[in-house]
Image (cartoon, rainbow, N blue to C red):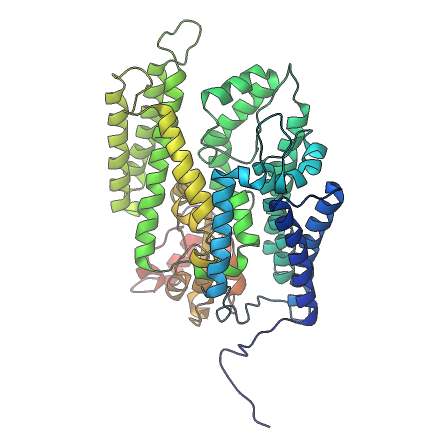
Length: 528
């Protein structure tokens, strides 16, 4: 008998009988939803919706358990780069096009899913979800309720699969429980329960507590502010919480834990990327050109959302100070002073670390400030030469719909699971800026143990060449790092470690860590 010996191991992969049955069960549930989409009438919608969603959830969990049940605890990505679905093959393109098509219909043609005008009964798949919507909020379903249900099921039940796969790793289990909890509770159930509390005399806006500006770019529009104020003390508290989240809560948590507290533990986008998107994390573009594009695109989105929000708030403020202190003058001056303070601080105290980036960033935002002050002399709603609603709707269409939904999620199988987080999310960009500036978080490396296997770089969903840092023994302090910890989990030698420590020595130069003409004992003593 001859044996095949390969450094890559056995690359063959086939589904077991139970995995095939689990797949059949899941697709049976999906088939019910497809029938409903094509207006097949189900006499007992509650029963058929329960059967459909139950079959999908059970199929996901059953498949995941059988995939990893008989394997030794540890990261197993067997054959992942040889399968059509996870290596940009035909199945990947089919899935990508299907998801993209679903998002396009969801965002722009919800009538094809059965959404009707107010006062009329829903049809199609949306009507099938009416019983669940009435149970939670007391209202008929919408396309967003259907989407939210799918989204939550994906995060929670693919999260179960993820936990079973990474069951040997406490950090991975804990953060996955966290994103499952926040998606199910804060993003799905609580907003629906809040809607149930509304009446003719009391109304709260639909509010996802974990969505912070600029991710919820709409939170400070006039209609939202009016809704908060009209809801009395509770509404005012929510409005204050939204402002405090930006200027107090977010910086403190990012200082202590890095952007991972949000991007990998709380955020719904990150939650979907980490659970349902886990099989596609190795598809992230690692090229230098991708990193350069990422920096320019994501920071351009931040500039866009800052200007857009400023214009929207400016449009409904008054010019007179009588009765209300926040006038247009005060607001624009406040925005200008805030941006000036931030980038003056960067240039004074961080220019050696950021180098050219600090100069470009500070110069760019100084131009924005001068732009704000100059355009202050133009009155009316066209502060930025466009109607503020045009700015808002353009941002919502291009960034909120096309980028975040259609491309960001629909093309997981082609671009990887974090393309939105890398290229388009303004929240990730701002948190990354804070992380690079003053966070205690870093990934430390033990270069002497690195065998250059490349697992860390391969499975970095943010496209960071982790191996290059590990080979040099250099701390990883990257604004794009979401602290998912997969690089450390897949390392066979324990080279990488996620740490929170003091800021001294956090960003270390290569020549010191390589030991060139350095008193190593002095260096060790300095780090203690």
